Length: 104
Image 1: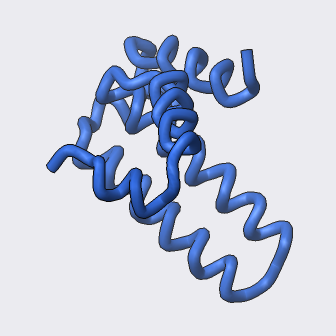
Image 2 (image 1 turned 180 degrees about the horizontal axis):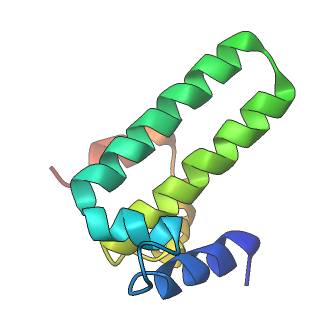
């Protein structure tokens, strides 16, 4: 099991925890809109960090983006394994072919 899969399991286990004791539980208790908002904020912070060319900031903001993405996926009951399977499926064809084959 990868580090990210382990993190997603930990995140999932916090879903029903006390929101006053766990940041992850607090996010879940606030609902999908707050989770989406935090994911968006962290994504923007990563973009800003990448423009500043500060390697440590880029790494830290990437970690924040990945964490909040996993929270969002967990809220939607989507496993990281499903995402990896989709990436593997896409890697078997060209990008243009894959894009043309996406269901609308």
